[in-house]
Image 1: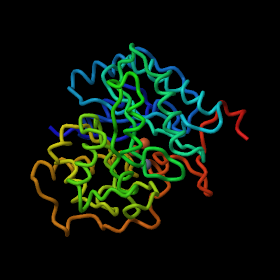
Image 2 (image 1 turned 120 degrees about the horizontal axis):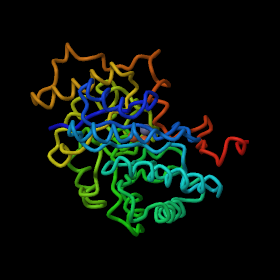
Image 3 (image 1 turned 45 degrees about the vertical axis):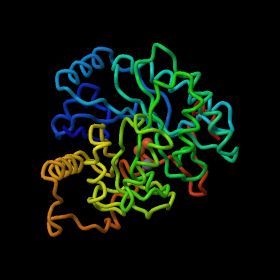
Image 4 (image 1 turned 180 degrees about the vertical axis):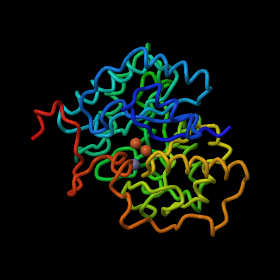
Length: 326
Ligand code: FE
Ligand code: FE
Ligand code: ZN
């Protein structure tokens, strides 16, 4: 059974996300625990959380892959930014104990000219503070595109963080296809080699979820701009090979493509069909592979999933509190 879903909004509550997912043919999904640009959230209704937990059990959903706000930075050069990230992640993990057994993925961080070694040490020290024995959620480090000073764009950096973790069993990896392609891992021509390298450096047992995205940019571009499935530089064939790969096919696949809900429903149906039949749709039935120039580049998930970066390439971090923002 293919486990696939997409990002959903919490705006209509928690159990409603489960129902929406089921309506569009999904059996997993993702959501942001709060505004992805950081900031506070109103406390969710415990009854609503319980209703979602029961719904997921009844419907036998695969684990969810819940996304931390992407502006959090565990290895900032500003101590209050690091403290804020630790506080938000700790709060999120307590909240998620009401939805046990799911995943909580996060961007490792941006080292802000402190160097990757310092970043790796700060991230792992922070994770050792955040994680504790009572947490019922596995935290997933996301593989990154290597934009700006992002840590985690090589398998070696992810491994170096994992090596320093005390409760290592409570951590895994979420592989984002757009990010690793932009980081220079050729999943079009060399998927087997890339997965062998992942296995050798990190271990495939650590891989718990896939963010399934096409990319607007070429291999090694370090850009991190998601594209609709089959419309980008990775393409449908290579993405279906990822979904069908024996080492990956049991994992939850999450779409973070620039779509509204109907577009997600179409992508889920397309991918399910390709996996079921083992064939790609005829070329004449496929969408134009050139992305719409007036399209969705900066709307929806395209802008929501990047590590927010100012035009000068400086990451914008979630600050301690809005009044502290310069
Ligand atoms: Fe992602
Ligand atoms: Fe992400
Ligand atoms: Zn991204």
